[in-house]
Length: 149
Image (cartoon, rainbow, N blue to C red; front, side, top):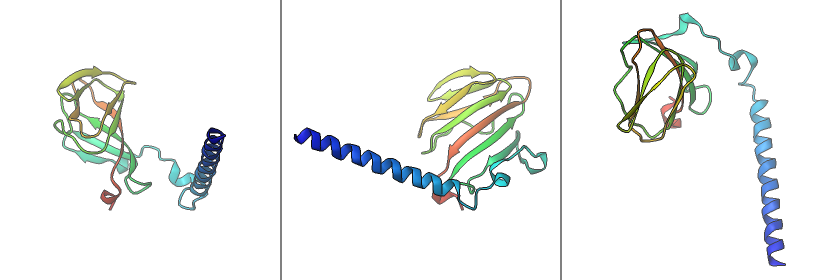
């Protein structure tokens, strides 16, 4: 009988959690700050940020949501935006064009278009262009809320 009560409490808890989650999603989807105009972003060459080795374009910047971002980086042949580094946030890379060398905690491998690279938090990681053409890749990362100013 005791196990039936525990199961009933767990089921009620799951139902309440799912209802709360659904309500939060409804509130967010109806939030006036979200519209078709600001939820769709097509590449605009006039809005690129130049870097020492190419450029980047923020499809979703740190201020749109809660620090979640989507950026495209473009790197010249045989260059890297920076040396391997680490930070508390995890990060995803997705190669669109070119040939990348991925570095993770002392190991390397090569990635071509449609290859992803996951960097766990606090890992020493990097990406560089080892090809003779531009390297284009997406970066997906969530910055801490405190950094969003």
